[in-house]
Image 1 (cartoon, rainbow, N blue to C red):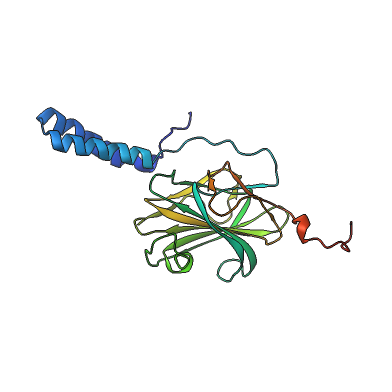
Image 2 (cartoon, rainbow, N blue to C red):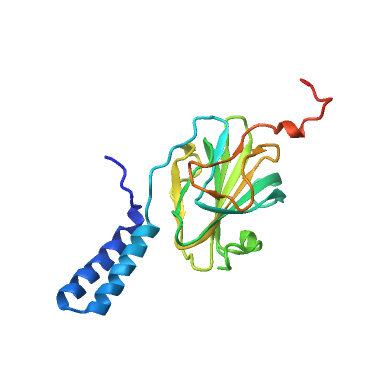
Length: 225
């Protein structure tokens, strides 16, 4: 069956609001009808799930979420993979597509969910303090990466549709966060960055970095030069 352009998680909400609109319209309750129609449109927009074109380059790492890149930098990730990483943070506002996609093919080795606060997702401390769900992935080269779904000020639910042991493909849907949030991506620090802070990206389609060593990290005296 062809994939529907709306995530199934939104079907109930859309049906309820649609029924309210029809009932109020038939009853002549113009204000309620207008409000429910607007609400239906907003919910349909939020749960939209368009197809994406995954890059052909096998080394390309794609964005796990739609939104704006708000942080790029090398950090020590001490909770899930316990090593220095390149961190890329993507902020999702309520108008972005909220279905999350796998950034690179591999095997899921661990999933770590933790309850927490609901601070504004664009704050630095939201990465650690907010409710979050981390997916740890081992790729064919043996490198380990993690992508972390983080609840925001409005977001109150994180959905994750994969489990440890699953083999996943780049661009595959793996979950969603409801109503404004953030996804942090942690990759090996030598992988080649392909985006800049402030850039807008699309999940499963926009390339954020490339696997493998960045040539700029290789000194002139390194083997092979």
